[in-house]
Length: 173
Image 1 (tube, rainbow, N blue to C red):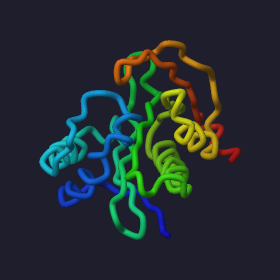
Image 2 (cartoon, rainbow, N blue to C red):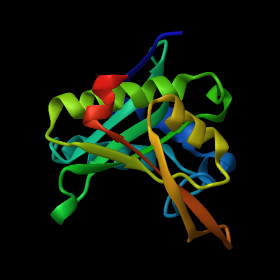
Image 3 (cartoon, rainbow, N blue to C red):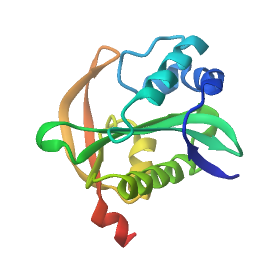
């Protein structure tokens, strides 16, 4: 299977909606996404990503053998954190556990570090999302600590974990 990240296309909206309109996927994401997630929601998101400042928003479709199966992005922070980006991603459930997301994370980080002045990329998965934590570890991210009682998801107070990858770290991998 050939895994690639690529710029979004409006025609990806249907595949995007299929990947994210799944309760198990959304249970691992921040709130605010519509459920069910429609093709129109996908077109709106893709339009926003395509019109975003390319120096601040690095948003891509994840493809497996040229089929869109998920989304990945890094988003520049502001003020004193302006050379830091937050990583976010998700993928259709039927592709979980195959190493695909690890490859997509590596590709995204390589792209961001080589096409911007970003020096640190971080991610904050829910502590219970062991699959996401493992993706980050396999992609070379370092565990920095647990953010205790850091979020409320589905009515439960939960911990999150902090992982980061530095541009200098990528050169060592």
